[in-house]
Amino acid sequence: MIIVTVKASPKSEHKQDFLNSFNAVSETVYQEDGCLEYEIYQKDEVSSDVFLFERWESQAALDAHLATPHMKEFFEKVSPWFEVENDMQTYEVK
Image (cartoon, rainbow, N blue to C red; front, side, top):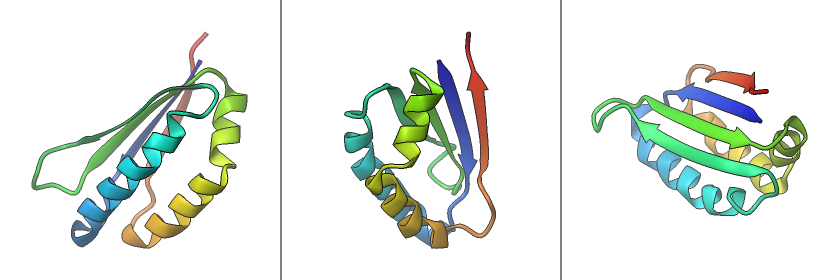
């Protein structure tokens, strides 16, 4: 199993746009082969900080997910909403 964590901070004026976009794409992601969990959490209502947590059956499932047209479109759409690079970590659970 693969676990992915992402700490992200969209610009404050785009926080709700990012949350809305994530929630919209998550419906499709949950239907992908190998997706076990795909969630987003807010630090609080004031902060722009969010935390994404994903679980995938395998690295191949994660790689396929990242290559989908809907994820490429998602990344292209939301990238301008960030000033700093997101902190993404990937863990393999055996």
